[in-house]
Amino acid sequence: MTLATPDRLLRVDLSTRSVESVPVPVAWLRRYVGGKGLGARYLSDELEAGTDPLGPENALLFMLGPLSGYLPGESRYAAITKSPLTGGFLDSYAGGAFPDALAGSLGPHIGVLVTGRATEPVRLVVEDGTVSVEPTDAWGEDTVETATSYPDASVACIGPAGERQVAYATIASDEGDHHAGRGGAGAVMGSKRLKAVVARGEPPAGLAALRDAYAERYREGETGQWMEASETIETVDFANEVGALSTRGWAEGTFEGTDSIGAAAVKELTSEREYDGGDGTDADSGGFRVETADGDYVPRGAASMTLGAGLGIDDFDAVAELGQTCDRLGMDLISAGSAVAWAVNAADAGLLDRSLAFGDSDGARRVLEEIAARDGPLGDALADGVAAAAARFGGTDLVPTVKAMELPAYDPRGARSMALAYATSDRGACHRRARPIEREVFDERWSPDRTARVVVAEQNRRSVLWCLIVDDFVGDAFDDLGAEWLEAVRLETAGDLRTVGERVWTLTRLFNVREGMARADDELPAALREPLESGPNAGQSVDEEWFETTLDRYYRARGWGPDGRPTRATVERLGLTDAVDGDSLLADQEHCSSEGR
Image: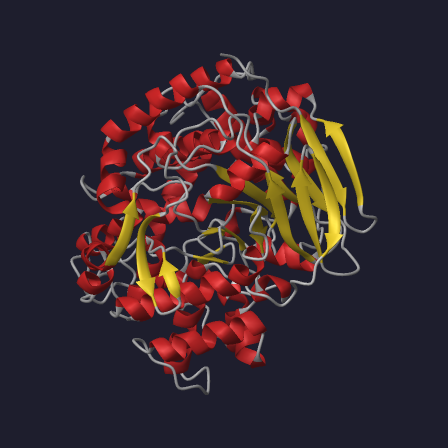
C-alpha cells in the first residue's frame, strides 16, 4: 500500500488571527523530509538574525513527519523555534496521544507555523485540515487543569511557567504525562499568548504490515528488551553503576540512595504497567505508573536522576512530588532541577542569603514554585536559567551549562565522550543528540578521532530519525534509516538518508552561527574540569587539552573550519547554498577532509 506525503503547511498569524494553507516547496521535502529538517528550513527562512525569541516575530512550528500516525511505537511531534534559553535553534519532542490526534486533524498538512502575538489569551483548534483561533479562559490554569477541560480532544498546552515566560517552560500534552521539554518552547507560546493547541482527529490508518514487521524487529532487539524490562528508569541504575550519575550538584558521581529512586523502587511501587511493545496498542499508557497523593505519576529516568540524585533526595515519593510539580507548572525538570542544585551550591558558597540544602525536598519544591511564578530576585533570575542567575549572583562554575542549557545528569567525568556530545549539540547540552556513554564505558577511553567519529555518526542518524519523527527507541530498529518507509509514502530524498542527516545538522549549525554562536560556545564547562569527589571515577575530570583536540577532530569530520563554521565546499556538497546569504556564515579557512566521515 502506498500513501501520499503531506505536502502543505498551515500558517497562523496570531496578531491578525489569519490562517493560510500553503504548499511546501517540493525541493524542501526532498532535502529535509519533515519534522526537524523541514522545521529548521522554515525557521531559517522566516527569521532575521537577532530576532527576539519572545517577540512576535519569532516563529513556533508544530511539526510532524511524513510517516506520522503510521510508525510503530509512540507517535511524536516536534516543537521548533528560536530558544529563549540559548538564543539558538530549538527542536523539542513529545509523545503520547496528541501527535496522533494532530496527524489526524491536519489533513494534507505536515505542520502548523505560528507567528505574531494575540491581544488576549487564545487557543488553536485543529480539525478537518484547518485551524481556528479562539479565545480561552484557561490562562492561569496548570497543565492538567487545562487539558481536562477538553475531554473530546487532545491538548498541548502551557502552564504558569510558560505564561510567565520561564526560559525552560515546556509544552505539555496528555495531562502533563508528556512534554516538549528542553529549551523553552513553552515560553514562546506564552509570549504569543497562546495557551493551548487543541487537536480533534483520529490517526491516519495504513502500512499495517510494515508497522508490524518493524514492531517485531524492535521487540526482539536489545533496546526493545531493555524498555520492556525497565523503561528509561533503568538509566538511573546504569549511570550510578558506571560512576557517571551527577549527584548533589555535580560534586559526586554516584548516589547511595539509588535503590530507593531507581528501577527496583519503581517496580515495587508500580500500580499499573501497560508496556507498548512497539505496535502502538498501548501507546498512551506511558509504561510504569505509580499512584501518588496527587494522582498517578509516570516515573522516568530524568526525574530520578536530576530531582533525586542531583538534589540528594532518596525518597521516591518526594522525587515524584517534585516531578509532578514541574509537570503541572510546565517546566523542564532537567533545567529546573539544575536550577535548584545551583541555588544550593550558591547558598553554600555564600552567594545567596538563603537556607538551602541537598536532601531537602520541601525547600526544593519552594524554589521550583518561586521560579514558575518569577517570585522574588532568586526565582526571577533562575527563571532565565542557571547561566543568567550566575551572571547576576556569581557562581558560573557551580553547575555546568552549554549554550546556557543545563546538562542532563550523565556526568562526562565518567565518560568524557559525553563532553563532546554536550558541547556540539545544536540545541544546547543534550544527551538525546548523541549518547556515546552507552558504548564508551564498556571500552577503554576513546581517542579524540574515535570520539569525534562516533558523535558525528550518532548526531547524523538521530537527525534523520527526527525528520521522520520516529520514536527514539523504536528508531534503533531502522537499519535503513527509514528508506523503506519513505518509499511507501512516495517521498524521494535528495541524496541518501545519511546525507539528509548531515545536511540538517549543518543547517542548524548555520542558523546558530547566524545568531552569533562560535567555537567558544562549544565549550567544556568549568564544573567538569573539577574532579569528582567520590565513586569509581573519583578524582577524574575532563582534560581541557583532550577536549580541544577532540573538538578539532569533530570539526574536521564535519567539514567545518577550525572556528566551527561550515566551509563553502561542505555547504555546496550538501545542497545548502540557498540557505546561506553570502559568505559571512562560512569558515574563513579550510579545515576539512574526508577523514572521519
